[in-house]
Image 1 (spheres, one colour):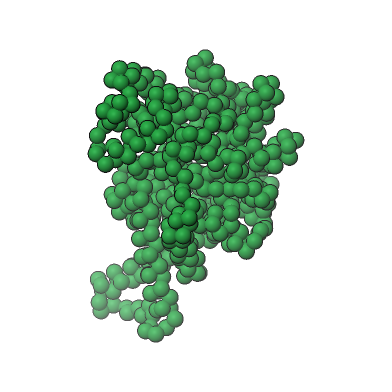
Image 2 (spheres, one colour):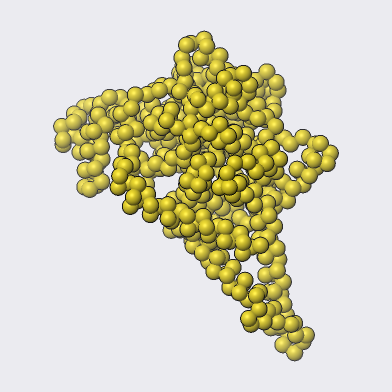
Amino acid sequence: MILLSNIDDSFVDFYYIILKIRRKFFIYQKFRPFQAEDLLTKEEQYFAIMIPAWQEAQVIQAMLKNAFSSYNYKNYHIFVGCYPNDPDTISEIKEIQPNHTNLHISLLSSVGPTSKADCLNCIYQEIYEFEQKTKLEFAGLILHDAEDIIHPLELKLYNHLIPRKDMVQIPVIPLERPWYDMTGGHYLDEFAENHIKEMVVRESLTGHVPSAGVGTALSRRAICAISKNHTVSPFDVKNLTEDYDLALRLKKHKLKMIFARFQAGSGDIIATREFFPNKIGAVVRQKSRWLMGIAFQGWRNQKWHGSLAMKYALYRDRKGILTAQLSIAAYFILLNILVVWLIEWFFPQGYRYPPLLRRGELLEYLLWANLFFLINRALHRLYYTYQVYGIVSALLSLPRQLWGNILNFLASQRAIYLYSRHLLFNSPLLWDKTDHMFPDMKQLIPYRKKLGEFLLQNKLLTADILQEALTIQKKSGSKLGQILIEKGHITNQKLSEALYLQEAQNDYAD
């Protein structure tokens, strides 16, 4: 069974390599990939950003301040869903609301917590009523959580792709943890591989892209399709992974979906960044909710619909329940073998155990094959982690993979227990919310709005001039402001004023 799973994973590896070669030598030779200037020059559409919040007083204000100071975009409104029995979160939002006319509180009628889907439905209803009242029509809705660090060009990217695409998912990049934090760190490796390779392969094979629940943009056409022209709630309140379920329903409507991994600068990927849990209990709760929603509820509600390729993608989503058991079974067998070897080493004249295998048996070839695939899997994980986080984190991915398998096993056991209890005794499946944290000022610096973006947004530069200056900067290593002054594109005084205003915005966000 492990060999079959390994072959499946290797097929995805092979397909991704072929896909990359095809795009580089055939597709991109005929069609130019879109560039940063394409994002910056298109006229801005209006977007609504949806943030469900339950007991988020510790992070919501910092998240909102950072978003307002970072976005290189003007035409957007933020709607935060809150519960009447969560006054602390509401108070944090109201404190900064006078400074932002585009910040709205969507107050649920019921006390919390209900479910994330229920909160999103309330926000959606508020947005719909806001459109009716103001005669403003949003081109799309964007899903975010209260702990997200948004990218300054995120809305520019959505603006470029919508309405040609109906759902846009950008990468989710977990923020780094200390090297010794194996529990929080294992998310780095999983998301790096999943959001570099797996999502790209799935889009190519099936035309379907799973929503991560954050960094997801839905076109107006998509919202109208799943809400049946605003007559039903778009998010399924019975599903623990409403985002995953949403993307599957969009696929049934044959809408266009894309996973957009766009590099805006040297190593600067337009993505949603956040801290993931680093406590064992929190990790197990979060991952068991994912497994229940994707594997069990997905199987029950969505069955095995679609083409053969789509069925294969669903199988890959659901096989995690099984592979988690296989990994721990393999660890248990290995532990027993090591104990046997240790006994034989300490007591050479004692009982001699029979050989584990005989030369030429099928088991020998299975073990050699699995060893090869194990090394292959470890090298791939190392490579993708290196692409995002560098060599130190890549090397740490090897021990983190072992610990990650143990965490996945614990999560699968909890998911099996809770879902079995739900089926046998009709016990409810509740919104098991994860506690969130937001980065401090120092950690936010790499993700703040860059000088060039600030100058462009305030119409002190054109996109062409900025692109030319960035090209020169890449070759010379000089500061952007110095290049712009030398080229006569901006005066010393204007640059000083821009730097002062940029710093003032950052101070407000802090």
